[in-house]
Length: 217
Length: 207
Picture (tube, each protein chain N blue to C red):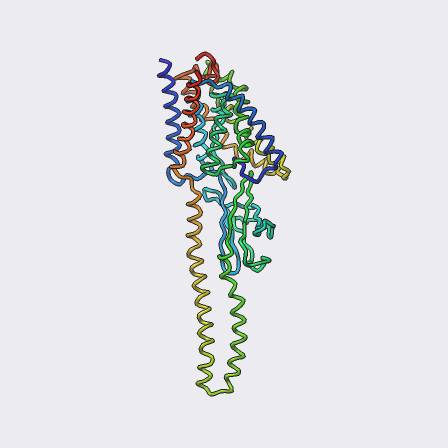
């Protein structure tokens, strides 16, 4: 009779666990903070949020270089966003580690590879192009007209190509931004299989302990 | 309320680890074989409870269930919570492995303390006595966990007076929810197997 009652208690608690799980089958968010960063134009944007999507307001952001030295420090705004210019970095060809420190002892880290923001540097070069172009056009003025056209066309095409490249980069960056965010969220999501796995491990340990205790009798 | 890696200073981490080790050894010695399934079940419930999310204002927090763990397990709550936190750290990256000692102490110490404070009243036959006791046991466990979190953060050296106030305010709704859950659990146990509460089931020597 005693065993029946034990089984009833165990069933109640198991039911409680099952109810927990059922309510959490869809993306079961819980107790973590996340940060991810991306390039937008000449700036690096960082977004900080709790796992349930709520933004991390007024939290500290620190940017470290590859050697672990702090380069920048700032605070997230009311939307959880903190941004800084790429120009304010001492070097442009290194990986950045961005660390978020939120309230109650939560921390999160994101590594932004140098390759992601290298592409934005050409903006400086295109202005150089402008000056060389004007000099060449002036020189071509002395020559025959159709020669002028021939002389300036290769430069123009190259300029146009640069502009197109930059626009495409910007457009791709914009469309992948939401993809990246979704990917980071999915990666950090709590999966149902993880929950079942964890519970399995707990019962596995229980089984092992019982096994060894029996053996010692 | 799991404290992440790299937030606390080494002295705090070591203190937490040492105190947790002592309490876990006490807990393991006092647990007898037949109650190990109960310990495992409560450990699993604790493991899953952290996934039940309650968003409150600027921050958000989760259920803890250390009240009912304390009432049913007593000292065995320490190993139960340690195991659950360990797997949460490994599988979900909640909290960290260096902070395992501190986090376990933060969650399990209120369990054993509230056990000693409230078990006499929870064992009572009068309905309103044990309902109130169960409610306050659940609520007080959360409050004490919050206070311990604030203590750990302040001892690390950060100026956290603002956060300490926030900790208590954030956890008020959870305190109420946990109190109610603890109340329901005790109500069911009283109906089905009240012997668990008479002499602590987990540490009974005679079975």
